[in-house]
Image (cartoon, rainbow, N blue to C red):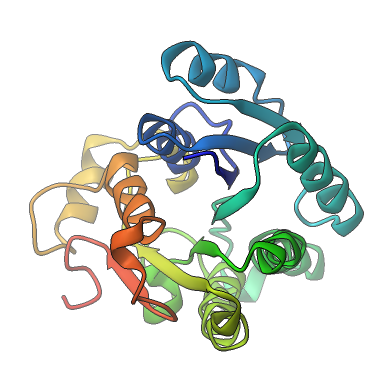
Length: 248
């Protein structure tokens, strides 16, 4: 496979992005990492562990010109882009009545506009090759209106990701591109507000149908499936990886 998967938001040591990049590399994907923080240590780990190419570019996903320049850099350094995992995001636990305009726009710009900016640039390349797999990470917060850790602007942005996913599945399907979303429930990462106390962990587990929190690898595995050839007939879908939270 001489194809590249772009992964955004992969520099956090305990994040879903890092787990996704490593899993995809283990499956033979070349990896392009786009993050606001340098991710050269991750790409070095990938190239030293797996027989694939990897390159990192820095960009704030809420800045379209930075995103375009970063994708241009990744495309020049790596084989053709065939897949994209939109993982860059921020949490926001501020109650609605205390919400400032700046916080609203910060969360929407990163969690929704950022997904659009990256996807728009990557889709232009995928269309040229008549092939692509796009997977964006939403959240059960989009379906439940919060209830995990983050509140209103996060839920709104993640709901927007679901609408964007469905609209793109319609528009990009004729070009051989599938577009899907993952809606994680509580995952044991720092975006949940840092390492969890035993009390908070127990309270979160009580909201699930199974007796443990999700791990980054759980979401990474779902992303890898939706990027694989075996998922060719799945598009416009939201896959909940949530321990039964949404059903509960």
